[in-house]
Image (cartoon, rainbow, N blue to C red):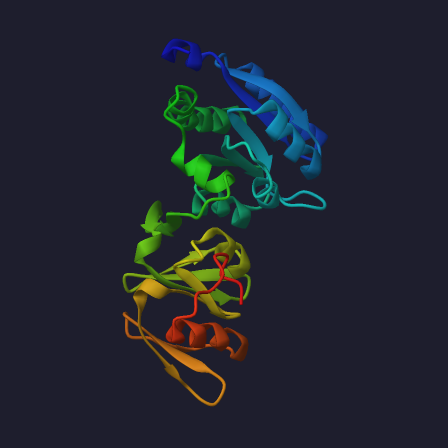
Length: 262
């Protein structure tokens, strides 16, 4: 496939449980000469099969759907297309950048907003179809550990390398990232973050704390059944009783499972 061919053969799939939203996206896709819509589906479970069978270059994916979220869909597919999230909820829209998707469309969106998203997506899609691949799409969809996390800083979306993250802290319905002496907010659950980080480096020591072992400078007994962790940044955290058993094994040199489970 030549670069010129790639420009005219970008395929897309629409995933949304709202009929009007699917119709709107189909119409806008038809107005984009280099974009070919290969189908649309109305449920998350149907989307999993469609993504793997049709192998589209791009998926327009609703985040909130009955039975299963768009994020759960991404965790179950084998094919790794680029993703543009669609959502009616602004808080969920930030998740698109946090996990590395190309863009998001906040409903209701118009033709101008769609065209801006396409202008942003086109060079990335051309590189992907041309054979260079998409590292961010592969990280998001392929099930591999994230090497960076996207956060909001001074009105911009910036990447924070996983190696620079000291810990993640659960706070109500969001997560605080601690990195380089700074704090960033992610609109995700800590369990979702844990599932996407490298279990060899990141360890859940408490229901509220996921730490980067590379930033640990000391692990010591806290009381009869719990351990305390001291981090390079100066903070100390007390592990839960269950997770202290994992820390005890680390201190003793006992390997833990590759998935990080107790």
